[in-house]
Length: 256
Ligand SMILES: *[C@@H]1O[C@H](CO)[C@@H](O)[C@H](O)[C@H]1NC(C)=O
Ligand SMILES: *[C@@H]1O[C@H](CO)[C@@H](O)[C@H](O)[C@H]1NC(C)=O
Image (cartoon, rainbow, N blue to C red; front, side):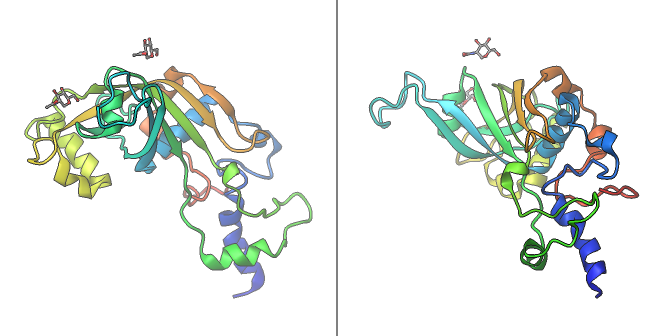
């Protein structure tokens, strides 16, 4: 393979970590910072593609007698399974609440926050080491390859509270069938602790999103700040399909 062919193949992979993939690097007008609404679309795409998040809760004043003394009021953050499976409210993350889980015990009657991080598909090992040592695009206005930076990647926090998804625990109802099929597509192992299993009591819940705080990457090219809950909710399936995140393959017929 000629070196130039190799570079042109790998360029989209490396620049994807440093410039938002929805932009045209030759078009100055397209290089403006995305709006909060445009960021909401990226955030909703992350929700559909990311199976894990970190939920932060606060230990209530009535923590179990087995908790260490003085735990009340302290923050508690743990990885949890998430999905976007709610037929009625696709913008509200779908969670399977286990009664034994400290996260869900703390969340009863309280607000919580869910931290989401975009993790791009891994780069081929060759391109990572090879391109980090070379800079073949340092002329003209072609984008410069930069070393990988997690700070350039989008992440955000959803704040809100949990409520039951009516019908979702019943595997014979239409909602139950839909939610459970969707949830186990993302989390196949969760079939062992679906509602009605004989070991742990569990219930499907939605995170009703009330506030969104978004960090799209570096502030010179990404939006950082609050996203309106109405913008978050109004994002359509079509809009989610129409954008790409850093490191994703570009849309058909579109350059990065
Ligand atoms: C389990 O949690 C749900 C709320 O998610 C509650 O309604 C139910 O009573 C709890 N079950 C037990 C046995 O405490
Ligand atoms: C949760 O936050 C809402 C505002 O979004 C507030 O009205 C409510 O009182 C809070 N709930 C608790 C239990 O603090």
